[in-house]
Amino acid sequence: MVLETGKSRILIADDDQITREVLNGFLKHDYELQFAANGEQTLEVACGENPPDLVLLDIMMPDLDGYEVCERMKENPATHDIPIIFVTALTKEEDETKGLELGAADYITKPLKLPVLAARIKTHLKLKQQRDQIEGLVKKRTVELKKTETLVKARDALVRDLFEAMDEMLANRDHYTFLHALRVAEISKRIAADLSLSPDDINALELGCLVHDIGKIAIPDDVLLKPGRFDHEDRRIMELHPLMGAQLFAKRIADDRMTKIILHHHERLDGSGYPAGITGDEIDMLVRIVSVADVYEALVAKRPYKQPMPRDKALLILREDAANNKMDPVVVEAIARVTESWNPLDIERDFSADYMADLETFRRMTYFREPLSDFYNYRYLLSLEEDNLLEKGTSHYHIIMVDFIGLRDFNKKLGYIKADDVISEIGLKLHQTVLDLNENEGGIDSSAMMLRKGADYLIYSTYPDEKLTILHQRITGHLQEAKEKWGLEARFINRQFGANYPTKNAVNELFSQELD
View (cartoon, one colour):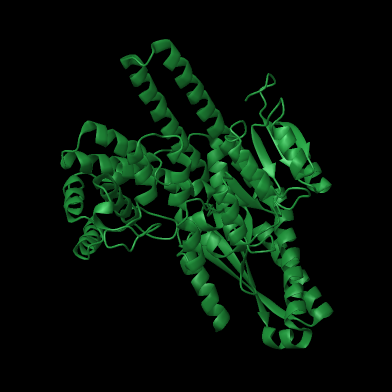
């Protein structure tokens, strides 16, 4: 419901007054807010005359805990469709899994990252608004057109709009997954046409592919956006996404073909897939098509953690899977035919709004930020260069490395925890120096950036010579202060590199110099 003021209504349910005040200060300008301090009060407000459009729900509350509140709201037809975002200090995976299984739309742990919270709220409100509008229009047109052929066509168009809107909701979480869905849909359509499936099946196939990964909306950023290989726990969480997506659609979409695509696209013919481990004839042809298209796109597409694989190598992997009874060989040969003169990577979609680019940048920064500090891991520098986002100056750039000497003895002398605090204190002073100089220069992208590798610090800089001299002087001062105060010896190495010289090579040279 959008109020006359144009604002959506959010219910903040938390027994902690400070949390309510923080969220009030952050959200009051954009939304109409309601508040509840316990479980019973939350249900009373949610079921009242002015129900909220979204609930931010704490778990540990008096009377009824957040889980029971969520369960009751999902059982009540009047509150069933209100999206619930758990905002809680509980960080265990079983707590998050329980919340999502009860029907919550999302799960965010404290301490809160307010920009991420704002993005999640916007995503779920937009999705609810789209769904409410579409359901309202469908009901209205059902009455007016009395289930005529015109109604069927209008309904189909509205359903397609809903699926495309959901796909764009996923783009707000992860643009790579968004592009993946578009490409898998087109690959699957072409395979289906090659295999002479009916137009109705092809239409259901396309819609199912657009939302086959919609359950990833509920996957935590630390897993969904991880730019590397999954460990066991990462994979366990990620393997929940077919169940979450299928649960979302099963109650709302009468076409079982789409629900099966969402639920089973990671199943394999030999039973080695997930989430159910079904085999053979239990996996229908549409799902078999999506499974092959899904793997092919993942292999040939570029990701932050891998380079694209050549088509021939991807087909070889799929044919090996078919020989091992994991994939349908008929579908694998069909994808070989349809990709012979067509490349699905030609399908691109730019960000539809400036804020999406900002969110993507923020996610990247958050992932590479060192825990409990303001420093970025040195791999952030390499990632920026790989995506052509790194300013390198007109002719050259500098990398400065601060190298602590005799660190093992220093750790033994002070103790590892205290020694780490000292190194962090030095890093914070260096970081503040960089920030101060950047402010005068006009921004971090055109000046300098502080990074960390283990106990060493790196400063990437495009400063002009006179400003670089100031930076050297201040670094020297900080290191001299550390020596006098703590007896910690350190040196810094400054190297200049040409603007076109890869930062990966530059960092390797500095590390080699450190070992020398």
